[in-house]
Image (tube, rainbow, N blue to C red; front, side):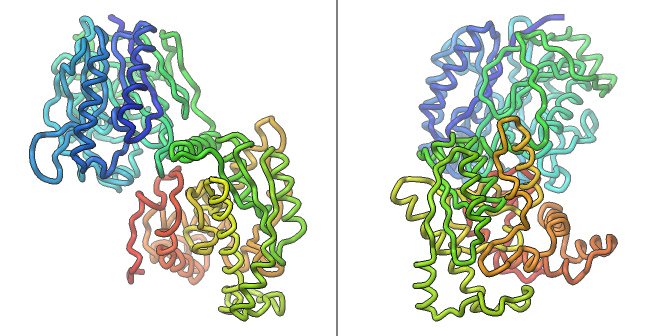
Length: 599
């Protein structure tokens, strides 16, 4: 039984900052080598950051990435760096790149592995840019140990459709079978006794358990350890959790880096003799044991609690979106409600409270409780707080439109809401959007919007009003999930961050007297599951109606909800991006036509 000390470089890269990324890669290489690493493994497309999207269509970008790789290679000594980079095939045509892992040592690129399996589902569209590699080699020699190198999807093996993949989660049932197309099989047959896998794997709920299940099954089936390195940090709609790990040859996790943290670590990996690996492969065993204890100076970070995992994902995504786009401070409109409270708390954790500016913009319909709740939230979080009443602007614009006062004979339900009343409600929201953007212009703050996934789904928002801003922090969090996150945050031992009153009051937009959300929408206990089935489950309206009927739900109500989701697509197209935490979020994940007659 040999041992290899592997360096894992879990980095927060800056997409397109080729020079900066090269500096980061070289510094991480030096740190790992100083820790005794015999090989240093980086993430997928390390040089560019992931995903570069249509930057890959620019020849100058690909050429500059190649120059950056040469610079990195010149920095290397005897220890190999395995670095992800786009590689030009030299052919003509729109798809002319490989997604490659370069093997660099002693000042040069000594070999290249090219990704075989190119995902084209969920948020991935790699077949738009890359052609697949076909060779399982070259194998990497680390002393007397040979290692197979692969990139992300290659470890999973079977080609998958969006339905079969269920995002990129779910343990493939064909690992080790005839349908298994992973290059790992050929690499072990060629003598590899260690598998190294570079990843650009974005976060979603429960993702880490799926990754580890695949790697553990692969390791146990082939009888070789697996090294899995992922990037960390936010990139527009995607957030990467890192959570890099190592399994031993029996499929036990022996090393795991912390989620949502940059870290360079080394891990001593026990490598079985070649005969052991071949025997384990031939008998097809997929037995997987419990988590083991790494022999490295050692990192075995615990898996996060599900709510903590989501909170940290939103914090990391917000921090990186703000900082990587050149901002330091944010503005959040504070209504005293649960959504704006959650966004402000996430921003305070992400940026520090001195960089968060809460703005209360009361109207004639704002309750005294909402005003004091917003002020109490700001005090609890330690953020800046200011009040800008919108009544002067509201009165002036309403007068220009000759809008009736909604305080007279308020409607009992949504069916009674007149066009004039809706105009007046939307007018208030748009005034608030104008004020937040004006503060952004004056002080250079980035505006965070506060809409949740449920309300975004059914269009319960005002275009150019509460959708006005740069980043939608909780866009992929359902309404009830927002409450769960706020309750979790309040339990973290640093005092009550979100006032109890914000959690206990009935949700309301407060755009007319005595307004409540349940006057316009079904209860969220019913609405959230309907949205999940229709949006994330991709069921048709008829299928959702049938499923709801079996549980006693009103069919007409279900049809109304699915109709609201369909007709709100134009709003979502004009709304800011936000971090993806579910199996299907709005944006890159879900591409629906605006003009659409299918029901």
